[in-house]
Length: 363
Image (cartoon, rainbow, N blue to C red):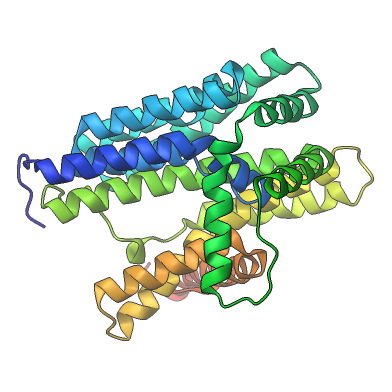
């Protein structure tokens, strides 16, 4: 892959990046609540997209997205949550941008990016504990309730209009129009549900989101650089060439078993431990599964654009639907254990080589 020293950002690309930054940054608090309401891994979207914008459109749109996200979060939710966003998304994104710009080896970037988002999340959780105390989740939900109650109807009307447009386009007959009041009532129910179950689900949801955010930031940023012709063979490696190391696979399976045992011993926090470990292992195996799918598509002669669309669509569906996520996890486990470079295959090959060495009289 050839690499240019730099590329010129066109005015159109700059304008598009600024538009994306302003729209996404303004809507980020509502998007965050949507992610949490689905109990999906909470992706640090402003950080992920900021890395992409930096690679495609330069520093101005990337910095504008981070700034707008922080301002809108402080305005609609409050200063403590804004500080959490700064630590868990904005600062890790800046760290990833540095690695992408320097065209560091891809897997070096990947490890550093995952670590940056993970450490940023830990720092954000410590900040949250300092702000909310032991009843962090309950107080956090109370803050969300009060802040969303203060939001004017005009800020929520676009979402009601979008739902009504979707219902109309779907051909639904006699549907009751979706109103802002309906949205507020549904949001109140979501917040009540959050308070009940997030004591168990929150750690795993956030940690798996941080892991995936690190992966997506590094992948999308370097892929965009490759599209511009400014990446190298070392700085961008397509997902089809990713394999979970055997040690990581063994560690993930071991942690899952430990979590399962703890959850069934009656230990008070056992369910939380099991959910956290399960979500982390599931996220890692889902990435392995997507890599396996990409390799399979490549082996059948699929074009790069078709592979990209199918893998992206599968990843989005896995985030939104638990059944698909579970299926991906199973595929990932099988691939990580029994694939061409799986942990079991490597163990068998190593054992066979050792036996061959012992049987060789010349050794």
